Length: 131
Image (cartoon, rainbow, N blue to C red; front, side, top):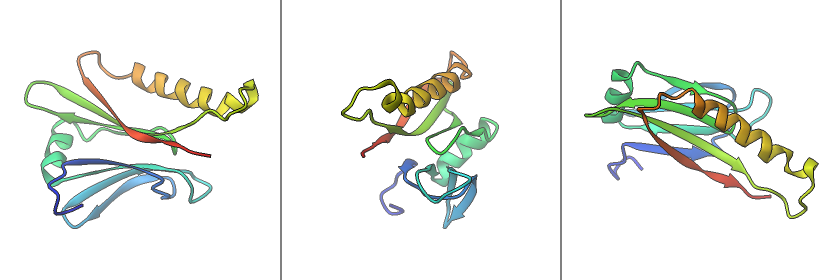
């Protein structure tokens, strides 16, 4: 990854406890995971160039849970909010109980997106969980 000139990369199944910031070589890793297990989790890795944009936007990092987090970046013309998500998929059986994890996830994502300034460009990066 480090030799591919990638400025921003989202990860699913990062498996880190809790939330926090880590550095690896010249890259910054922000992660949001479970407080009780090494399963799930999302992370965003960014280059030194993207770190400058993140710091220019106030170093905003919002870990919602092990499936949703976002950061805010300053671009030349405006701001960009980048979400890292790990969405559950609905099981084959379509019962209300079986769909509850998806309902909860999308309600939390909607709530988080409602806090983003309307002028921000929003990018959603991620994956869905397969059962």
